[in-house]
Image (cartoon, rainbow, N blue to C red; front, side, top):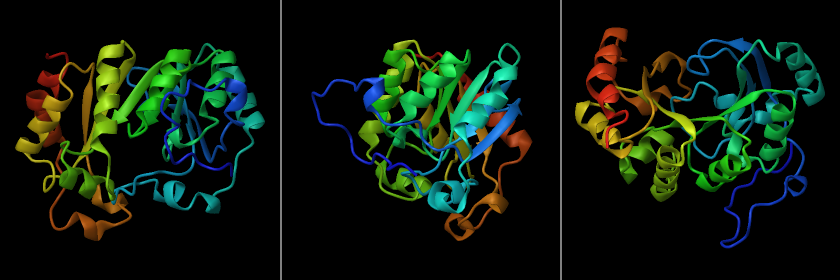
Length: 254
């Protein structure tokens, strides 16, 4: 697997040419059609390995933490399987793991765009400079960014499973809301961590966003259930109510 980029490029350096960013990253999973990974669209989904977070409720933890145990898919074969879908699926979602860790991500986006697909990026938002660069190049059409907790150190460390530079997240949020790039924020919530007060704090952090979607954390799919502590997940009715009362009003509000 190509080396993951773990550090930010040097300040003042311009964006690299596509030819200089390395080969496309390995693909560890491929879903031909999905009705839930791109809001309002039919999409195919590519899953890339590796992650810089260690969220205890991650349902793709093997992909994030032990990608070597999963076989690489041939990118040529994946592109061949995608070709008949041009004009039928609305686009391709690049998910993970955390796709922005891969220096070759622009090359992969470019291949998909050249094949006739719109591209959506799923990201935790920590590497804002990658999101900004892809958008400037016209290589992404939509971004879905996870908002895991209120933007304070303790809450985010608990949800992400590691220390997080919150300024990087704020930069991504500000860019998405003000750049005109189509976007949404997504939050997987757990009652013990995300009560009404915490959700209101999160709503304030993304005021003016195009969309914010809440979903219930499912402890049965979490790789580290002990980290969640005691409790039950939100019910579908409770999620719907929180969506209506807190997430909905935050959208477009400034």
